[in-house]
Length: 117
Image (cartoon, rainbow, N blue to C red; front, side, top):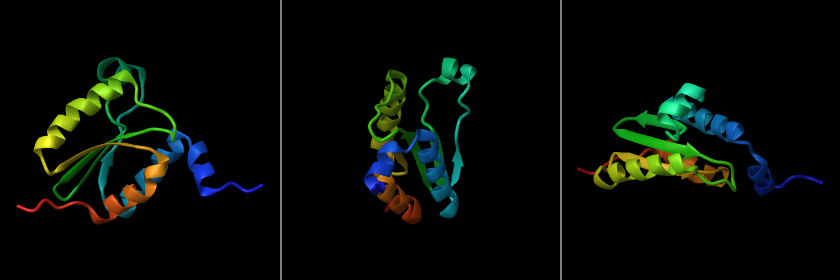
């Protein structure tokens, strides 16, 4: 029995997914940062997005989840707060990404997004 692409995405761990997104970011020359996942970080800044990526004049805050998982309450709080910034700035993107979003992620990281002034 072989695994289909969808089956693979459904079984992809968050670490595997993150590694894939980080490799895409490197390929398309984005600077990125992944905050450490340690006890001190969870206590003081728990829920902060998994990746912050910057290229040209664009910043992306991305929370990465397994295909069928949902953000925690603290992750939701960060997402809502950052989404308010996204509403008023054409240079900020805030997303919750899952493995099924990989085609869109690759397209965004390849092309970027330039604001028309």
